[in-house]
Image (cartoon, rainbow, N blue to C red; front, side, top):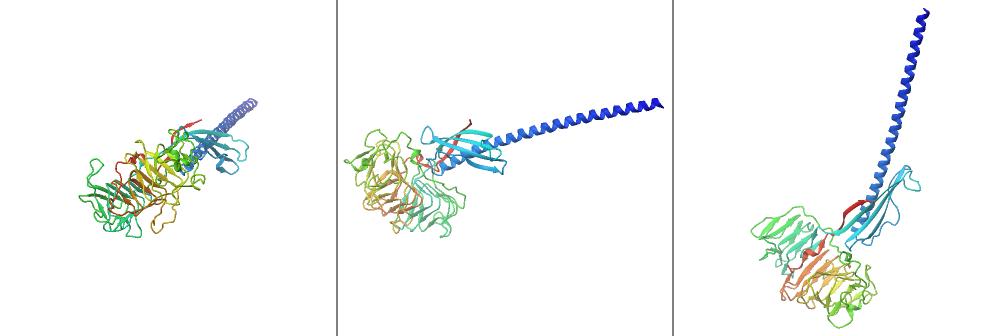
Length: 472
């Protein structure tokens, strides 16, 4: 009996030891698992917060691109940290951005630093990511002979309006049945809600050109978002027209061209007296190859130090545009001018005008290379009866206009009021928020736009786009 009890006791002790060892093993295992889980959670949290810092840096670069695309080409960055998000007291994410000039006026260097503070009120970030983005300004499309961001309207006196490609974000209206719109391609992205919902409406006519500049094309192509209410061709194709009506047409977002897109830091300040002193013809700039074509400097808006309180009176002089130009003034705001312009070579020259343009007539000298005038100024509001759609660029009727080498682009309204033309073609092209054509027919020529003008060099929908990205 005593022997049996001893054996039982030994066996019970062995079981207890085994249980203790098993408990210790399981405890160690659970503790190791807990430590590993906690370490994994810490590493995962660290990765998440580091990724959040990366996202914050990318948000900063996106915000910089948005600022540039909003027209703030002078944007240099945030100057301080900008908060992106916060999670109560646990953490917050910020970014700081610097924007510097690239290798040209079409390039910007964006550096963005994303930071995550944990806890949110920490004095210094625990996680940081820094990226560099090279942004360039480019366009996916180019202008046409007639481009409107809203309305193209031909008044009742217009006989023929002749262009190669015509585009309107809003609608086209031809006011009289003797008015002909002659074009190879017509695209209209909206409608006139007050006139039978027409994309192209009125009582005028659409006419196929006798010859086409687009290789292989034999019919006028018409693409409209809504009904075409003119006949011919109505809304059906025929021997003269290929019609696609009630279709989805993408609108132009912007025709804005900043002078910095063309003129880099090698251009320097010049004097507005280049425009008003000396005999005609006057060279712009007055000193050859000097690139002194910022008048009076490279800022924005009208400057009272240029001309007479921001108004340049050009008179009847000839101006030889020998380089791209930026003018911080209006042209002939107080009194109409009758200038002549000449580009001595074949490369397109831009004249960026911070104000408005008021010409009684306009001439490009025979043999001139192409010139594009870009007017940033507002509609004057002085000619609402004659120019119901605005007059940031105005060409009047005091003399005959002959400017096949000149393209006119207004950020606001463009008005040709009773304008007479002495050549065919008469203008290089026209663009504006609204375009109102009220030309005198056959005195001696109708308004034909120059199909040989290099439209492909004038961009539409310019935008800053990231072309290269790297993590620093």
